[in-house]
Length: 124
Image (cartoon, rainbow, N blue to C red; front, top):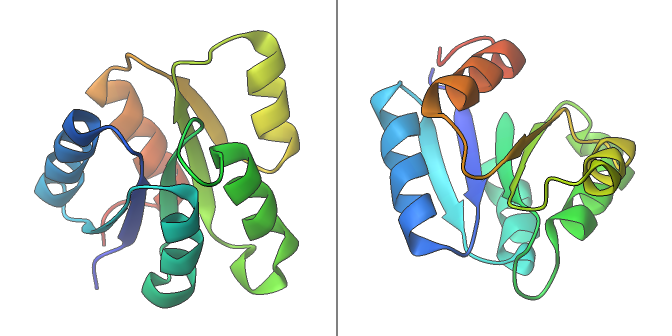
């Protein structure tokens, strides 16, 4: 069974690229375009891993990450934060809230895939 990846990002070009990359590498994908959609999708889609943008409408990626980590049912979900906010303070905040990895935009697809594989154990 394919691993499930939730892409939570409001930038259409990034969403399209990530969706293509993940599907091409054997992952089942769902998209959330804001923080509220992301939290709803976690409950219905049951992702193994979330690619989570920090700056999104309705709820930030930081808020989404914190809500996921507060729910004992969702503890096994891996979270990779993707953001243009690459200052040490933002990275430290993301990791403190429970992110498993933090990748700054623009990112290399090779680096991203390595992180996804490392955290999810591969697509299947």
